[in-house]
Length: 158
Image (cartoon, rainbow, N blue to C red; front, side, top):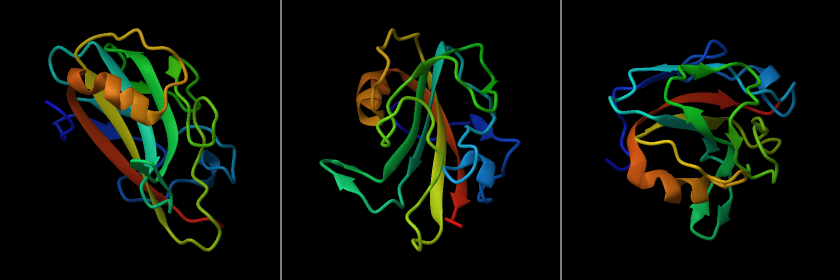
């Protein structure tokens, strides 16, 4: 299938589509990941991956752009979401250089940024090592993506 939107739905009890992400989930707050729930995964889904990316960050590194806030994979196909502050499953490396979630924190005076939370449904359980970057993960899972969708929230530094 490649990377194209599907019928899957992704939502959060913390914020709605296009809404501001509460401070609690940012680098200026408690810096915990928001709860996410999804449904409508394609038939044959065996696992999921979740990422959060800020394409508004003024960064270009090699062939990549923006800033990666979260890379999480190895989520079983039976999962229907993640609890707030989720620490289960396999953490990749965010662009802060840390494993797990690192909340929104755009540069001061940089205005509103958009944060794309993605859920990707995969056709198999992949035994991937911890610490993959977003770009490494995407390279490994691309042939296995059955469907995906996103929830976009916003944040502006206080």
